[in-house]
Length: 282
Image 1 (cartoon, rainbow, N blue to C red):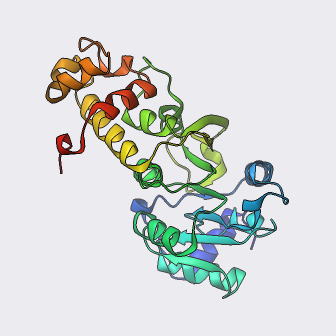
Image 2: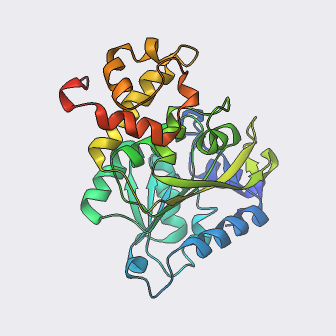
């Protein structure tokens, strides 16, 4: 399969009776240089062979017809794929064999189930659909899946949200959630011409490296809840958006007159520590 040839991809899809579904965000990488850069970065970020976690799996979300999978299978690590489109799954098995490990269905459901069955992977990678990238990343972090590193090709705007600094317009509840668990870095940008079909927005490769001081699950969920509540009214002072937690704001030493974008991820954690379980909406 020539993953650089749009005509070959079209022919494969037509012969397989597959119509691309916009809701699945099916944009295939057709730029060999980009694929090789991504694969090389993944190789560098994987634990060294001598590390205890080196034998665990590499997970790829949304492999499509295998443009990146083809390179991942050349790495000496078991690869598990997560694909929602059953027609695409049939193509992958035809191209790469029936022994390919594939979890069929929406990653938002199958990812957590796979984690419970197989344990945490060494790394999760993928060309994430623009429509569901936020939900996928949030699910991984909120469910306390201890994934050491993640490498995702995502919409540029989304990558910027994950890396946004306090006080910037892109800073959000998702920024707070992710940055309390991962150091984030945009490795490089990818133009629309690297994909088929060509998306209308730019993309970026983001690298997420787990911090040593990961928050416990209960504190993670409380921090995420209070950040989402605050940012749901981001133009209002905390005394208004978090009026139910004025006592906790005072106990945490946080100025209730501030807007949520002025609080660092650590500030939200400090506030969450003051909120007892009975004060959390069910």
